[in-house]
Length: 257
Image (cartoon, rainbow, N blue to C red; front, side, top):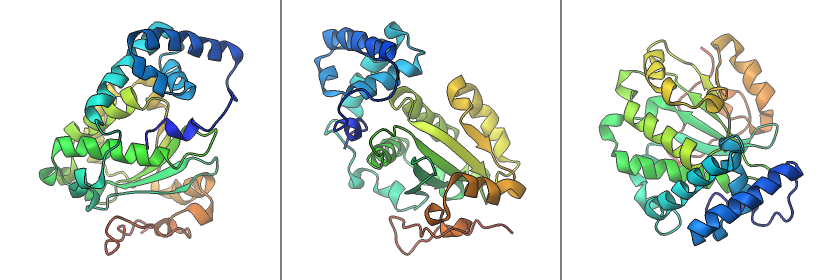
């Protein structure tokens, strides 16, 4: 399912103001004149691109048309199949489960499980698309964003992959704008900061505000403030059992030590 489909059943323009929807209407006229495939995208998708470009119709239209072109190449069959990203899935480094207190689907990523020596960059890009599209299927009507916890416990130089980080960032910022709500980075080792400093300049200003580093002493309170116990993974003291692609491969222990 494409990322815009979750809003297809949402009739009317609830949320936002009349002037914003007027700009969406104007933007639609621009993009449909240049690419008929625009008709397949709902108004909520156009609004996200419009917001990503501070309501500048010209810039938002250019961004959206670039997305349509990318989509035809990146997802020629409309979606990414499991067998196209099998090598990434079997690592069980990422789980899309549960919701936070404002109803955003949660992604839990365990960075120490990413091994760049074993990854193929093109498959990794497909994997990012696969995860983002599947996360969007979890969105309820009226909710357009997801949240994430990136657990870096045990992360070291063997896990450092600047090319993959930049590729994921490019996909998320340019083709899935206004989807990311917040990212909590936890158990962050000192060595990670060198990699972060290399990636940070490529993050746009609005996205930078969504990343939050959580000190170990604040971890429990921060997670419980964001996620109900029933939706919080067992590994963090909650009641949600994470289920990976490989059922025999549970997430690494990340509770406080």
